Length: 328
Image (cartoon, rainbow, N blue to C red; front, side, top):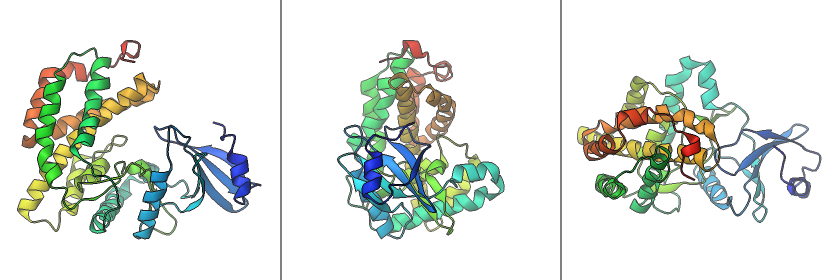
């Protein structure tokens, strides 16, 4: 992975003209990341090339988070026309890899990330668009737009959307007042910093929405198995200050948003394969179906569970996607 052509001049203009540049792991988007090192100084270069990417939302949320007392990367330099942003380097100690090596730390670290969410939800939300019905529906419709064609399924798309409108209504009503929802809050986006804080990454798609969304994103992680008892213990920890009735309602919304998110991710991971050629994302689909099926067992989701049973039976869910026959 080579740095963008404009990187050398951008770094020179900002005092890093002798720096070495090396690639670091990226994400599922068009963004790319490079480590920049000049002696003892280190930084991360984000390449967010227009028109595919716009770094302004990332910068705005980073500044909101740091202004609210949370650990987001400091913005060291920017050139928005070129899509180049120089960021504080949070190192390589990700929550995911740390727990792979130190599973005995799992309970303590998950408690910390849930506590961080509780603090974020008590802070005034960022000035962002709402996570509204239209956005929720666009996301769940990725299943019928990509996964179902990839499995050669003719499904009831109108009924699918109608049911989701009804199920999501109480969740949307409860988003008042809203909280900041980072939308990709999981173990691969949490950095364990040397000063003991938890560094936050990949929040550029943040919206104002329901507090259960980031909670379910962490506890029903698309990329890491989270045991049922750990999920329950952390959910109970988050709800420690809720009375019984409020906790029951929240758990219902948690299941709904879990099903919404997991439905969306099945669609996204299929799209990454059939549209972008990233077949490795199909490896996550068995986990996503397990998570979705767990959420669908909640009584609040009975109508959409019935739709899935009628339109995507078990034998299809367990059937590998044939990439050569997938939708374009």
